[in-house]
Length: 257
Image 1 (cartoon, one colour):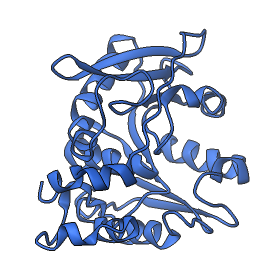
Image 2 (cartoon, rainbow, N blue to C red):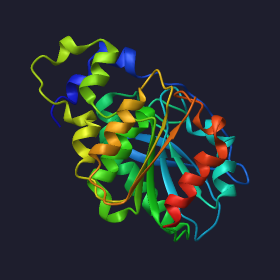
Image 3 (spheres, one colour):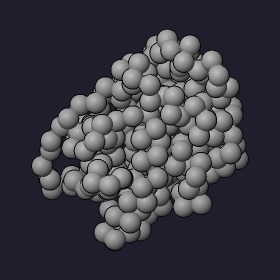
């Protein structure tokens, strides 16, 4: 993946990734699961079941978040009969190792396969979806790009389109003078070849990843069936709280078709 290793430059990682540790016990409606990604390193995940025949969503969260943070959000999904499986990154939550840009993309593959194996082994038969929020849009789109024959749909919330513009927002363009397209994080390059149903969600007042990025993802998507939800007055981190019914209904309807 052209440019992906360059994204592991310490100057970029310092500005891009904000890992946070978090421990959480198993609860009646929240179960920890660990997926090996490389050698002795495993990534912590948290599963919030709704029902054995309900759709199953593999969720890659945003930066600075952890899987246990979704203990308060998962009930919204359960009320809509959606199984939610939240994956951390290396160095986040209960995961081992340290995060890098390249590991976030590469680990998406064993995480997805581990998710599928866990879901099916546990007796859940619903359709499989992948969803990514903010930073999580990159591994989610990577999974959809590579494994779309196993998926029923892709959901992107507050995601970026252009890796080049993301690099400019980080203020590190000088590190990519000899790289035309940093494809590893190039959501715009991959989504053109993603043909499964796609839902794009974005806040109209997002000042971290502008809504224009969400509009670009929607326009570039190769999906024949695609939908969008742009939430007025919502920023980067408050979409669910600004419009909970609209937000969840868009996901519920998308996963029922």
